[in-house]
Image (tube, rainbow, N blue to C red; front, side):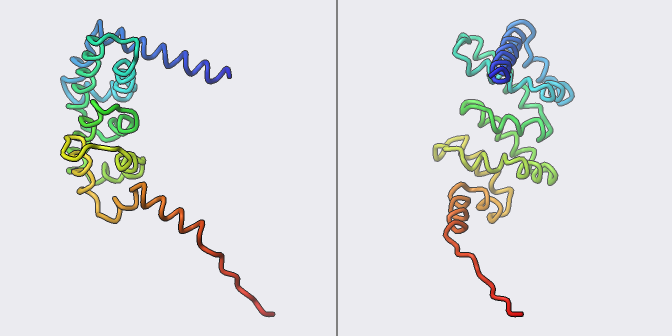
Length: 180
């Protein structure tokens, strides 16, 4: 009980801090200058905190718009996949499309980033997103999927994982008789 209560208090304080920073300092303006400015913000989890402000019921529409602009500005200049992977797992629909579009740009040029993206389960996460056909989000997911061999992408699709797990539960163990 103490741990979960403490975590909620810490999260609330972090969102409060991010809210104050959005209003007073313009984190998005700082982060949009260059990748060197955006990286420390990403390293300190600022985009995730800004997403907390964006989805908070307590945030005004103006504050939500400021937080959204700040996150988009930071994402736009981010050049490292490590900075974006946490956002793949936490971003909400209005923001996730920008995250995935930027991921696609980075993954196109960087083989090591492609490997990290798959190993971090971000590739699995995007397979689980229900995107509307023809939307920018769906296009970003498809663009990322096309950067990987089809068998890799299929391996991460939820229906394939379920099918493989069903095969495991339905298979019979083989009994070997050993004669001495």
